[in-house]
Figure 1 (cartoon, one colour):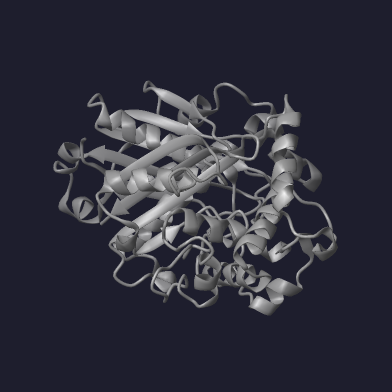
Figure 2 (tube, one colour; figure 1 turned 30 degrees about the vertical axis):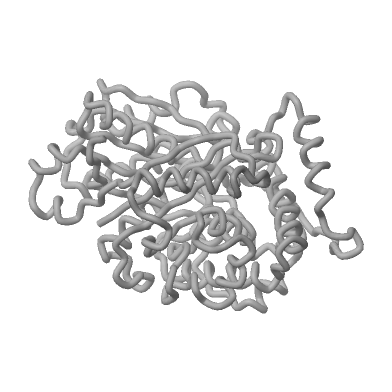
Length: 414
């Protein structure tokens, strides 16, 4: 395979920007990535644009990527649109990476943009209903009924309060199953959330920039047991972008660009992975992670810093276990012991993760890439992980009858 490098990254602040258009958010991230790489627009040979819900909120379907690139003044190149629920941005990244692997192109762009904020909060939360099988809900209901056989006793489950997306009920059930199977605790989930809020307070581009103690997380309103509101990612808006290039192209660029380039060791993007079924002792996500480690030529013990898809605190614990970073059932213990803190032996989500940095769906995967590039370059400021050389991003999206509809694992090296 060709050696491929990230030479530019860009990201807007994440938040609620009701009066800012999708195309303007995307342009801000693209312009920052171009500046970061020291490139002009004409150097970009193909563009991959991720977005899920522009059509839902504004009825803008079909040509979203083309509109973004025209708005950026980047016409006359192939533009591809990508959707993969919360993993859309990494679908764009993986496709930009593959464009270079083919040998047809040497410099490509991936950008993800989303606007979830709306004056009607119920409308924002209902948007997540698009990420399941809406034509055959009975298939998901049957799978859910099967999962609930492993749920806690109903008498142990406090009532939920307030509005929430359908996915928080799924994460809540997953957390309860994890508690029953492995003995993980609500306090361990709270430790994850408190860590990520504290990390987010150090990130100038995070949606939530306030600290939280474990006790404050536990005292927040119950969303879907064991998840309190502070354990769940918010809805919001934002964009993130990355520019990739071949090694031959990189060697023609100024030395300062070469010195900051990040090598892509592995880019795995796959689908329909069963989270609960073990095959040869591994779940579907674990098999995807193993494929990434094999492509990268490194094992989980070599990873220095991680960004995972913590749409909830339960998600972070389960993802770190599926990645082989901790044994099954040990992720919560590691979080509570401080192993995954910025100063711990394996920092996870130094950006604040989805819980604090925010989760504008179509941008999330590239926001992870942005953070890890900052970490590997030693440019992450107060949240900098010491001696970070190899980084991993895990991103997942959607539900296919209680299996993961899309999943990506990316490994990077300075």
